[in-house]
Amino acid sequence: MDRRYQVFISSTFTDLIDERREVMQALLEMDCLPAGMELFPAGNTDQWTLITGVIEQSDYYLVILGGRYGSVTEEGISYTEKEYDYAVELGIPVMGFVPAEPDAIPVGKTDKDSRATERLAEFRKKVQLKMTRDWSNAEDLGSKVTRGLMHLIKNNPRPGWIRGDQAITPETRAEIAELKATIARYEKKEVEISAYTPTQMDSKFAHGDEEVTITLLHKGRGYLQSEDGELSYTWDEIVEVLGPFMIDEAPESSLRNTFNNHILLDIQADTEGTWSTDFMSPSAKISDRSWGAIIVQLRALRLIAVGTKKRTVSDNAVYWKLTTAGDEYLVSLRATPSRAEQAGANHSLSHP
Image (cartoon, rainbow, N blue to C red; front, side):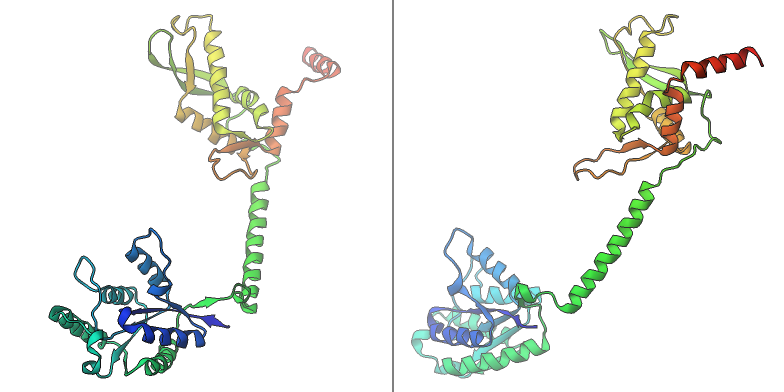
């Protein structure tokens, strides 16, 4: 597969213009993508932020030393050395190119400041701790870069860049197709599992006319007065209240509000004075524990199941629906029998 590698070129600039041009030409002839300061666009982006971003995207890093240490940062280190240290820190393969005869460099291309000369010498020693090549002139440097980079690529494989139409090999396509088939099998299995709906109620759990006591919380009108209370309901009444809303899938919060309203009506309809007269307009709520018990029981009876319809990612609600058994049970509770059926039932009761 045809890969192209991005190569970062680091050096001082004004004293190595010809040398950098030769290096860039050598890289282009190798189908590499050169990156360096002369290619950076003008803009408001902080210079060092821009440089580090380009280095991070590069596959290889070349540093060319001449006779100057270069402009320094606020920390007192040259940009060239700072770039080199950053590339090494990232683990990018680096190669240095140092002058074969430093003393032969023209005076106009060397530092006049003794401190800068010392820093350059120290930097040269650092670079020479890793792979380096000597160069004598621009043309020689270009050829040395070509041979050195070939060696660097051979011994330090990097991801490189690939044309979009070549990025997927036949092997990768086959692998992707296999993964898609595996995912499809799992999705089908998941749908089959989620689509499973019991056709018969599990009658070994409490149901029908058996009662359950629920705990509720309510607040009065006029002042906030919290008071716990209890109400008893048969399981058939609970199914009658909630079942119609679960013929299609319903969010749990909506079901809970429906049951709260049912409780409220029972409190307001109390004629025996069980509840305080202050609670003429209370807001009654079933406790979390009691609501959880109802959900668990209806699931144990196989009357309800978790909803399976696809919804938006932002919809975190839990949805419940009637199973086939739950739907049949609700119909048996709520459907009105015919007059003939009622007459037959009454006749059976009067003539055992």
